[in-house]
Image 1 (cartoon, rainbow, N blue to C red):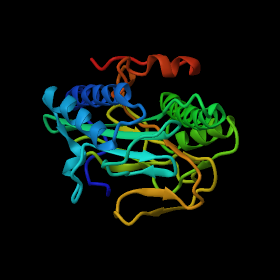
Image 2 (image 1 turned 30 degrees about the horizontal axis):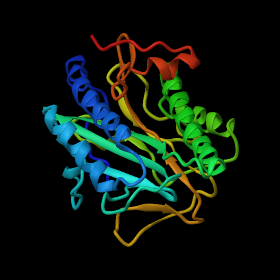
Image 3 (image 1 turned 180 degrees about the vertical axis):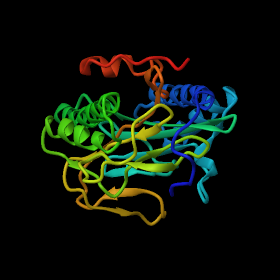
Length: 277
């Protein structure tokens, strides 16, 4: 999925137009989360997300990617991102990353969650996979919190890396990164999940980015499967993926794809999100 060209900073009116697609994207993931259980196929999850988005007046924006025909990307176990929904049946203990996006009135939302399917017979496996999912989500919120106080965008990569490293030994994928978002789902600038030397664009009102750490239990090497979409770890270890679309505005910061604007996730970092006026 390639970056599109667009201006980096949105006007206040444009930021207001991005609130609705963020909320619809969040609703689609909430509906999918409720449906994840053993025996459900990834295509059934896709249908739930599509129905939720269309019922809300939106359009699944992943379908607008050339060659892609689904609402979701669903990546299981050693799959990192871009997993194609199909007849795969979820099993007890699976770690499932779900990426969704909605377009409403020409503006886009993009977010991802990772869920571990319960398995009472294998508590150690479930605990290890939950630890990976939690570390990845912790990195996401650390990055969003850093965005609230940084002067330059690329400062958040160090915060994400430090937060994930504080939870244990994990691999942070470097081949795939976050991005700007607005009229197109994938816009400039890139958003790194690890330390980089360039400072990056200025963090100021109008900046809207999708922050999305992708983390593994092992190495950072990856490859694309025969379907030409699904990205999996080279070493076969588990992967997790969390993402939110976040807007910087004159009053502060608002997580567009979180129902509470990010209040719960940011509270441990001492950051209070402010609604877009």
